[in-house]
Amino acid sequence: MKTINYIFSILLIPMLCVILLNKDISAQESNFQIAPSPIAYPYFEDGRYDGTLGISFVKITTEDMDLAGGMGDFKGRMAFSEFLAGDCDLGITGMGGSMPGLPPIMPIYPSSGFIPYFIETTGDATLTLLSFRMAIDIEIQPIQTDFGSLIIFGGPNITFSRFDASTPFNLIVPPPFSNAGEVFTGYTSTITVNSTLAGWQLGIQLDINLGSEVRLSPFFMYSSFSGTQDLTNTTDVSGSGSATLSSDIPSSTSTSMGMDIIIGDISIGTVLQQIQSTEESTQDKGVFMISVGYHFDDGTDNTLNKKEDDIISYNEQK
Image (cartoon, rainbow, N blue to C red; front, top):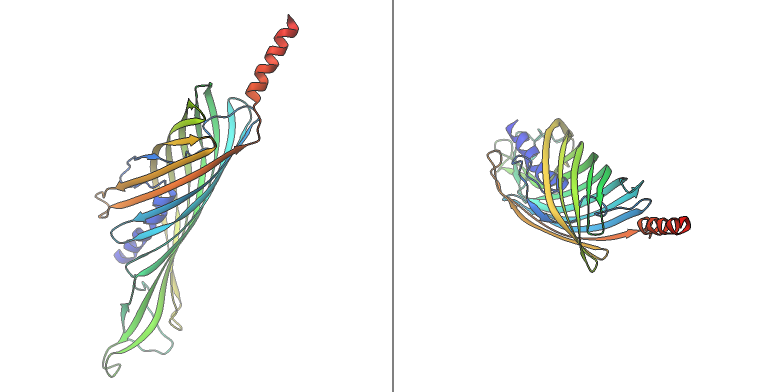
């Protein structure tokens, strides 16, 4: 059981690092980032639609693991008034890497019947990660001026992830069951973890207008989540079958804070941080991410139109 718990812990490291904005949930700590903000744009106007497309390169390293890949996301918002808006965030992550090989965690009963045997891993495990997330927020904008704005947002989120670790291994049959320790080579063991995480997020974002189309947008977000995961182990040994284990992911929380830098319609961000080990973890985890986002809208400037309408109405009254 300790081996199974260790495998669950190792395989969840990259998923949780990516899903939870590169946070160590055991440490309950916050790290300041220069990174794209969680919502489409730092302010909104009545009736305007905003959208942001973003891409990121991500690299995660631990003492036992190296993962690299990309993330893509789309954030869309519809403003119902100058005070209230709704948004949706869709994202997908794909990563690959390696770690020390993991032997099969299930008994192997080959159809040829050569047992007992020893298992010898012959290389590192090849890792792949695919994750899809979605969040829906209600946004409230109590402050909106030419110099800056304030938005409070919150809503549910859900993430689906699949993580695979494939390890090459050999079966060694010792004497007297073989003449000289016969070796059966070329097998692969694959451990697959499918997980579902769901929870809530709540955040606040500021807009600081520096002029010349440059904006700074500090943000803070609190997230909570829980879920389930299924671990399946299969091998290509003829007749060996497969084994599946299920467990719950306990309720946990994460905080993230940082600042988005927007120049014109382009958002840029870089995260470079070292997440230190805690009592529950013996490994340090390094995270590097660079992101670029492009903002677009429907061209509506209803705030300006409203001001013009007020001027016309005032002149007509005179």
